[in-house]
Amino acid sequence: MKASALKSNAVPAFKVLIQPSLAAFVRGANVGDSQETDLEELSSTWFDGKAFFLLRSSNLGFAGPATSVAIVETDPSRVEDRRLVIARHGKETYARRALRPADTPMLALAAETPDPRRSPPTLLLHENEVALHRIVGMLFNAKVTPPASKSEAVQVDGTGSLAYVKSAYKIKEDSAIPLALPGQIALGGEQINLDKLGDHLDAYVALHLDDGSSIFKRIGEKLPPPLDRLRSFETIGGLGIADILSVGKPQPGFGAVEKAVLVLGILYHLSPP
Image (cartoon, rainbow, N blue to C red; front, top):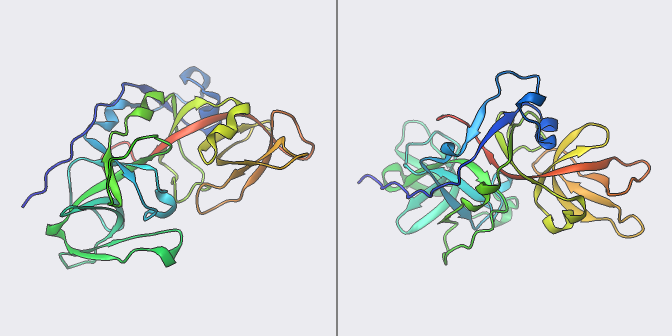
């Protein structure tokens, strides 16, 4: 029996240019500030035919931390091997990586938890028994109220944070792997007041530094006094290291944060795969 499509939500209208560099992304550059003449445009119509699932587990590892909101295609499909999916099987909903061996109608739904000792068993199912929805992006800090559920993922209205999209950037660096891969699109929100960084602990941010460089990090804790003008900015993927940077007041020997832009999410592609 053919699985039904998911219901989608109306997305707040927006339209932004996709900046060619992280520095332009953080500075909030417009097309007149860029040397590029063929900037792509991203609008809210990208979300047509998409639905949102709150992840209640860490089964997608760094690519989809628990409490992230997965953006999925509303129509179920025969997904490619190793794609991240939301899978509906009976009354259960799973957030997994789909493994599709060749020459068999069976597929495996595997978890990739950061701690493999706490990983749930891999599920082996006939492809006709499960509805697979490609995950095509992630939203962070979406602040949605989940309905009661014990499933690994639950459908929500994840459109609230999209009203705050102010910018977009095509990722070129490797430091966010596997959360974000080169070629994917980062969604930028409001610029954060530097004295309010503590209100956004663990949030993903793009930082512009006093040496002209820009980095993509996760907000960590302040260092204890007398070094409390310094803050840790953590790696957000499987690569890279934490940075200790000064905020508000310079500290000899350390780079300084000049601007911080909240990263609202990651889109995996702009057109159908």
